[in-house]
Amino acid sequence: MTLEMILVLGLALSAMILFATEKLPVDLTAMIIMSAMLLSGIINAEDAIGGFSNPATVTVGAMFVLSAGLFRTGAVNVVGNLLTRMGKISFWLALVVMMLLVGSLSAFINNTAAVAIILPVALNIAKDCKIGPGRLLMPLSFASMFGGVCTLVGTSTNILVSSIAERHGLQPIGMFEPTELGLIFFGAGSLYLLLAGVRMIPNRPGGAEHAPVFGSGEYLTEIVLEPDARSVGTVLARSPLLQDLVIKGVDVFREGKRLEEPADRLLLQAGDHMKVRCDLENFRKLKERRGIALRHRSGTTKSEEALLVEAVVAPGSTLDGRSLQQARFRSRYGLQALAIRHRNSVRRENLEDVRLKAGDVLLFEVEQHHLEQLREDRTFVLVSQVELPVFRKSRMLTAMVIVTGVVAAAAAGVTPIVTGAIIGCILMVMTRCITLDEAYGSINWQVIFLLAGVLTLGTGLEKTGAARLLGSLMVETLGSLGPMALVSGIYLATSILTELMSNNATAALLAPIAIAAAESQGIDSRPLLMAITFAASASFMTPVGYQTNTLIYGPGQFRYIDFLRVGAPLNIMFWLLATFLIPHYWPF
Image 1 (cartoon, one colour):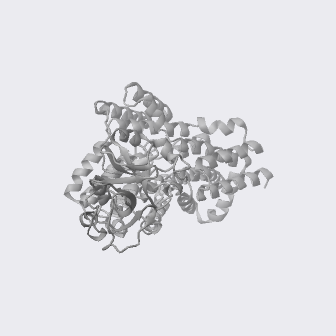
Image 2 (image 1 turned 180 degrees about the vertical axis):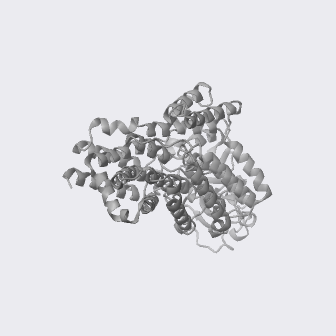
Image 3 (image 1 turned 60 degrees about the horizontal axis):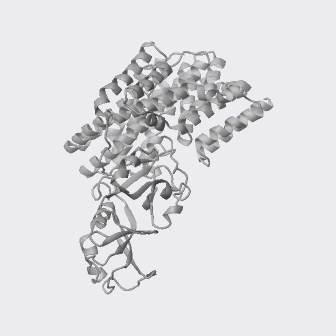
């Protein structure tokens, strides 16, 4: 083993640890690894920046724009309207239709975007059906992954593996090459969820039955009694505030001191500052009451045009891993957080200092005219029941034709997918389905930089011979058991790593090793590469293994164990299916 091999393997191990622990943002980790290889001389400058011009990176960026074009014209929102109608008929009917629709959408557009669009609709259906939101949201996330493995453009991982294969002189993955096995996975996964999985998801009380749309948890807010409040002059226990609303807890402060008198003797006065704990429905009623002002650090506010809005912190956003103070939330958005639901607990004090994670939920007040601007921000996914943005419905058909044309051209071999995707983006802007600013804003730059960085890691593994060494070790370990054991081992390794770190990073790390292992064994590398594409897009056991799982974690009131309980059997089932079916569809 040479010094260069040792160095690149050390960098690969360091990258895996940093990706898994997320001590640093994943895109920053990828850039650091790329820089370290460049400085050490493992790769040259051309190799270092080659990841940005790689067809996989360009194609993934273009697919973000095409997905945004479908959303801006309202084409995807038609799905939400259909689901709402189904939910009024039956929960199970809505569940089946939702899984079919989001799976179909995810085969052709970014599945995180598809889940973000359906998320508020699913929450509303859960409320109407008096079902815990988790029983809709976990199938929503999983179905988006089922659909993503059905086509080349379903996930960025498929595009990435196809590009790595092409770089090694192999045939790129065809547009519908994964479809047949993908549909088997889709069918098997859906049956598992409908017959057993959904019933394994806790139907936690206080979810849809006792709360509007999403607000199933309790929030703490601070209010001030104004002179015209009906509760002024009454004792706390018999005040209209407690008689008319469901208040779970209240502390009264006067001149900065907490009043310790019993509730049946504490006489309320104008100017009293109260800390009130209640659910979102009663929070809304509280806000609308005469003589009640929400209290901020800077004073009290009461706006007739303001709305209470709940928003999930989006994966990879500027708030992910930072506090509100660090992100300058108040100066950037002009908003004050009223409450934070951080994982499974409600943070009651020092909200500005809470370090947020993707999936956490913020409650804040926003003026009506700022709502659309907030909805367009990639930092959040709004889940409150608020008015939908204005869509360019007259261009809906145009957007659908463009996306269909891109897919059809790639499937027929008329143009490479990267060429068709770029042309599709240009047409989206020229036909005014999407503005140029919206096109730039729709691209998830964290994914782009992550892809560019991890591609250079794969290049380093290949140039130093480390990929060939790891491939030989894999063959020595599993080769005696036959090629099917290699497929099984590659799938299992990919599946486990994907639960711990980025699926794109996992694919970029293992694809060169799989190709080297196939060459060492003297077999076709296609089955091993397909094992990676399927396994890297099927992360069911943790809320951090895939972005859609992270997105539903807060709104669904999930715990880590929920994903393990429901996802582990699904992962094992897909592993067994892949072991026996991949060699059937892609012979050695």
